[in-house]
Image (tube, rainbow, N blue to C red; front, side, top):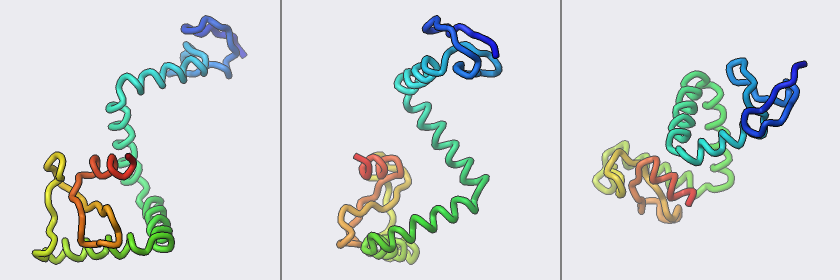
Amino acid sequence: MDIYTCARCKGTFWTDEMSSNAGRYTYCKVCFNKIKIEQRERNPEHYRKRQRDWRRDDRSLYPDKYKELDSIKYHNDKELRPEKIVARNKIHELTRTRSKVNIKKPCEVCGTIAEAHHDDYSKPLEVRWLCSVHHKELDYA
C-alpha cells in the first residue's frame, strides 16, 4: 500500500483511505465527499438532470426490473389506498374515451403537457392538471 497526501486537507492517508478519480489519488474520502456536496449545492439543477437521465436510461435498459417494481407499487397502493386506485382509474377512463366531462388540459402553472393530480381521492373527478415537475413539487411540498 502506498501513502498519499490529500490536496485539500494536506493529511496523509493510505491508498484505501483516498478517493480514486481516474486512477489518481488526489483527495481523501472525507474531502472528496465534501467537494461533491458543495458542487451539488452550487448547481442543483445539473445534478437533478443527471439523476433524471440516469433513471430514464436505467428504466429502458432494465424494463423487467421496473415492471416488477411498478407492479409492487401498484399492489401496495391497491391494498393501502384503494380510493387512490379508483380515482386514478376513473380519470384514465375519461381521458381514454375523450369524454367531454374531463379531457386532458395543459399544466396550470407552465402550460406544458400535464397529468392529473387529485387533491382529494374521495372526489375522483375533481383534478388539477399539472406537468410532472409541478406535480412532484406539490406532492413532496
